[in-house]
Structures are given as C-alpha cells and as structure tokens.
Image (cartoon, rainbow, N blue to C red; front, side, top):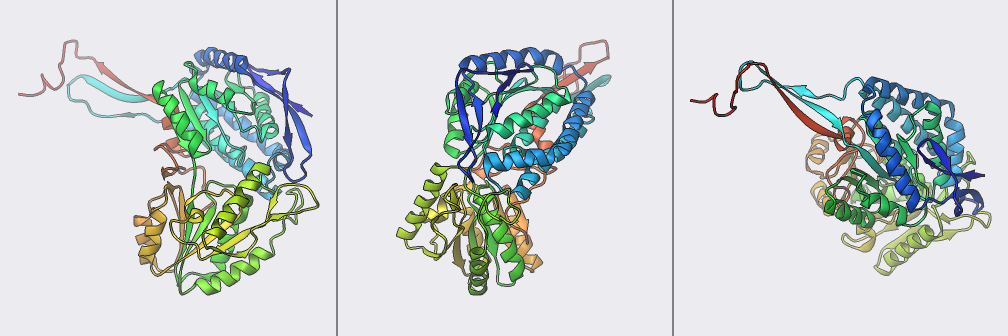
Amino acid sequence: MEFQNYINGKWISSKTTFATVNPATEEILAQIAEANLADVESAVQAASEAFKSWRLTPAPLRGELLFKVGDILKTKKEELARLLTQDMGKVITEARGDIQEAIDMAYFMGGEGRRLLGYTAPVEMPNKFGMAMRDPSGVVGIITPWNFPIAVPSWKIFPALIAGNTLIWKPSPETPAISAAFTKVFEEAGLPAGVFNLLLAPGAEVGRALVDHPGVRVLSFTGSTTTGRAIAEAAGRLNKKVSLEMGGKNAIIVLDDADLELVADATLWAAFGTTGQRCTAASRLIVQKGIAPKLKEALLARTKKLTLGNGLDLNVEVGPVINKIALDRIHNYVQVGQKEGARVLTGAEITDVNGKGFFYAPTLFDGVRPGSTLEAEEVFGPVLSIIEVNSLEEAIEINNRSKYGLSTSIFTQDVNRAFTAMRDIFTGLVYINHGTTGAEIQFPFGGVRGTGNGHREAGQTALELFTEWKSIYVDYSGKLQRAQIDNRE
C-alpha cells in the first residue's frame, strides 16, 4: 500500500518514500511518497491560482461541497476509523469519534456558507450607508499533529474552505496514511483542483518552507509549544496571521462533596483515553483531602483493570503510544517523578503486549508536589498525578499557576462553589462535573498562557483567522461630507 501527495488535483509520486508504522504491532502499514521543496512551490502556486476562482464561488455553493464531504465521511466512517487506528493506535471506538467530529464540522461549517455574517450599523452623516463584511485571507498553511489526525485538521480545513481560502495541509508524518485517505474524500466530493493540497513529509524542512513562503498568508498550527513558538517568530517577521494551539497541563479539581463514582469514571476516561495523548488529557488530579483516600482507592482498582492492546480489538481499553520516542520520553518523566519524591500507586513501566508495540502501563502517582516536574510539565502519556489540597481556593490557585491554560474540570454538588470556579479558573475550557475532554464543535476551542496565542478554533470564532474584515461606506448625498468635521458644531 502506498499513499502520495496531492497537488493541484493530482496525486504526485516521489523518488523518495518513508514508512508509516502501526504502533500496536510495529508492522509497516504503508509507504508514503515524500514531499520536497519543489512540491511546496508547486502547491503554493496551485493554491494561489485556485484562489482566484474559489473566492468568487458563492459561499452557499462552497457550503454544499462541504455537506457532500460530510456525507462521504458518513459512508466511509468505519473504513476510515479502522485505518486511523492502524496508523495512530487509538482504540476503534475513539477512532470513530475522531471521524464523527469531522462529519459534525463539515455540516456546521457548510451551514456557515449561508451566514459568514458581517453587519451594518448607523453612520454619522445623512444619506450615507455603512457595513462591514468578510473577505477570505488567501492561501492558508495548515500543520497538524498525529493524536487526532482527522478531528483537528477538520477544525482548520472546513472554516478555511467555507471562507473562500485555498489551503496546503502538512499533517504529521506519524499519520500520513489516514491523512491521504481524508484528502481523497475532498477529491471525491469534487473540490476544484488546487483548492486543497496535501504534503506528506518527515522532518521540519517542508513545514519550515511552508511557514516561510511569501505566498502563504495564514498559518494554523497545532503541536508542541517549542515548534509553535518557532512558527510564531518566523510568521511575525513576515507579517503573517498565525494561530497556535499548543500544550496543556489540565487538571480535574475534586471537592469533598463530589459524586465519587462519577469522578472515578470521568477521571479514568480523561486521563487514559487516547492513552493520555490528548492536549486536553487530565494529567493532574487536584483533590480535597477529605475525599482523597476513597478516590485513590477507587482509581487504583479501576486503573489496574484497564486492558492494553491493539485498538482494533473491541475488548481493548488503552492502545499504544505513538512511537518508541514517545515511549521513552514518558518513562523518563516517570523516573524523574520518582526521583523527586512522588509515589507510584500503579504502572510506571513499559509494558509487553505480545512482544510488539509501544505500550505504557496507565500510571497513578500520589504525593506529587506543586511545582515539581510531574506537576508542571506536559507528559503526553497515560500518567496521572494526584495533588492533595485543603480548599477550593488552594485548588484553583495551583491550577492557574500552570504555564499552560487549556482545560480544567471541577466536581462538586455545591452550585455556589461551581460558579466560583467558573469565575476564577483561567483556562480556555471549563467543565462542571465532567472530565477535561469532550469539547463540541459549535463552541470556541483553545487556551491561554502557553497553550495558545489568542485565537480559537471551532464555532463561529474559527472564521476570524481565515477572514479579513472590510468596512464599506456608500455616500449617496452627492456632495462631500467630512465625517467628524461637518457633523459637529
């Protein structure tokens, strides 16, 4: 099986290829045509040329194409989910959810084709009219990670297209097969040549060329904080618009009056779903001391029973991590945590599952100190750190101290304390009596501090990155009217 790059409506082969590996079996899933700098130039030229006509295509018609993409995704959902699991490792039920999020976004953004709302407002002078409307930004460069290889790109691709932009997508080299399969859906839907371009490549060269290319006016990135900051610096020098969605160190706050069983269910899912490889994964459990002993007991029993294995097996609850590098990085964080005095309740080891794959045992740490490495750094794996506190105020203070600010949840049956938390927690997402994951596409998604740079994905707010405001004034008085001069004594 081989997957190729997609440029100007054609699948492009390459003399050089790289392999994508199933992280559960370590078997080669497919060979991938490797894009090069010439392909970047071709893709930008194709997108620039296609922009001339795509921006003039009526937005409702662009929306109909997105509806068609959603329909095709529905028919191919199981096929794509199975490929996604083989390419990335997450369990099949989560892979189906990954595809479903793209279906939801296709329909949501398709509907925006009959809105793309601007506005009118009263003006100062008689016989004069004023309005504000949106223009597309131009050619968009999209760089996405491997952990949600369909959902995350869909948050960027669909709003970019509905707004009238053309795009070049560079997905993670860890998940090229599912990325190419996703691209084929847009081709099948009938997107004009050059509107959607795909570049598959390992390393940083192609991504860097996309960031630096003067023909790319907007950049949307999801990935590591280090890479995101480098992109922002480069884009800033070139005066480009750039959206960054980066790291997280998310916390579940549990107060003494919380529903113990609900907390255990939600924490297990938030911490170990997607094997902890989510930007919204719960990696800190900030627990009031009164409920801490019973909660630790419940979590320990449940964590030990989690089944690891190939995500295509319906009995498996936790799949592999993405690769050997991630496996070693997670284990290194665990060892650092132990050296700093945190106590392992369970896990903390690389696990053998039939002698193949990159599996790490779901891990619980107790006695984690605020400010320690485990409490502060993003592990991006199945590791949960328990921190005990005396009060809601202390819990919020520890939560807000993080250099990241993506998602926080709180469990309490006291409405007053719930509203206090809603007011005082400073993260982009806040959940009440729910884990830190589960964002829906109709609301803004993103974080503060080291997590992002002020932009939001999903919802109508996603259109802000991909559009430029244009203010229009129509004077039908037949004479010169000097605003702020002629309308004042």
